[in-house]
Image 1 (cartoon, rainbow, N blue to C red):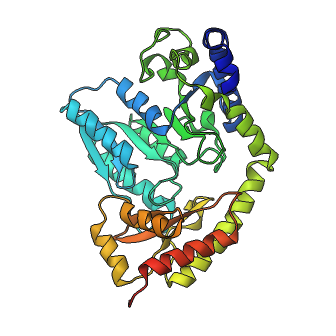
Image 2: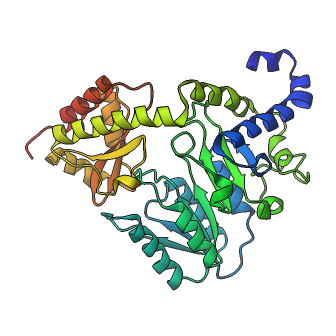
Length: 361
């Protein structure tokens, strides 16, 4: 595709790029279950959420709701918006941990919303990045709308991992990456916008078609931007379906995840994050690290949601990629599974962690 473009870039950008973008968006809309007119393709979840939040009109006293599990980029975004407009308040709620059932999450949201009638927008994770939890987004969207709050769903990890029916969900905005679990190249993401907000939600980049009546045309034409990651979505989805589609992939990945998390928990003398099975992501899970002096030293040096230092040491010393999260006052390994993984990968992860963190408990 790149070769085709470079043979005749004038023809590509003037006559092919826009149509192929719209065709790819239509394929993604079919894949996730939504009307194609409501969906555009953007670089990643971060850029999509930026487009939404920075398009909104903010008034004195408005509030934005996020949680202690909100992804760092999104947390930084709302803090930036509040800094630029000091009349805006950021309301940060804690998700109760451990969790017995999803009712506790809904009740925590309801309590904060009742105390904070100024909330205009809630940014809600569908699958939390730091803890790999599925939040009850249908119930939370309803709760928001009952209280006059706009619901923006951060579904960065959801396309390809969860069945989505965005028209039925009826959030105000939904953003999700296609380069995480749908095999698209970086970066390719979807931004679903409720028809009520088509005319008030604009791309981050103001370009030639910013005033076009059609939502997709406003996002598709960005001058000589490289749109090839978006255009590959069609082939990526075809490949995803060739593996058996979501049901087959979820079955395969979930079995490997359950086996690996059990094996690691036993090897590390630890447990998985205490949440209901119904709230566990199909392809991701947190397993507690061994409780050693070295582990605690890494924990003390951790700032924010992730231990980048331990993550880097694991890779530098053992060439194993993983994510180390800080939740409930301790460090966890956020283990991920996909169709290209095998049991040997998780034995290597087990041994890498034990090698770095071994010492007396």
